[in-house]
Length: 203
Image 1: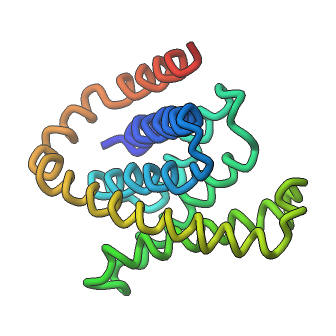
Image 2: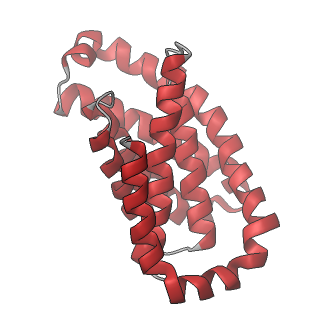
């Protein structure tokens, strides 16, 4: 299976899905959006690593997902950072599976979520120094990690285990066929899918 081709498809699915979910929640006037889009990212990353388990693929998928944010004016800089940190934390968390052993179904979402939310909050406040976040100070960071992060953790447990369930009952049985298809048409199809996704999300 082509590393780049697979990443292009999964990254596109993450990018499209996150924008659609964010905009849908905005229409519904739901204030806390980050737990929902974060959990969706965990779902995509988990399914990706189960289908094609290669080191570094989570990072590439994240970078491709970020590219879709250039097309949406309602997406802010902080969300670029959020996706990148989520991909990094998940990559590290997935590599720790041998140490998590039988508890990985809970510990990977736990590790990925709280490290992502903490890393994001500190980056936005102390590195990027975004005005709204800086005004909130330490109390804002603590609130974001404990409230938004805890909701994201609960959603991520569901997303992580749903991805495992989906893989075990559907994709695992068809992995060989997927690999054969990717060897024949993977790169061409993934590039076409990426371009059409960019065009569609920008209409």
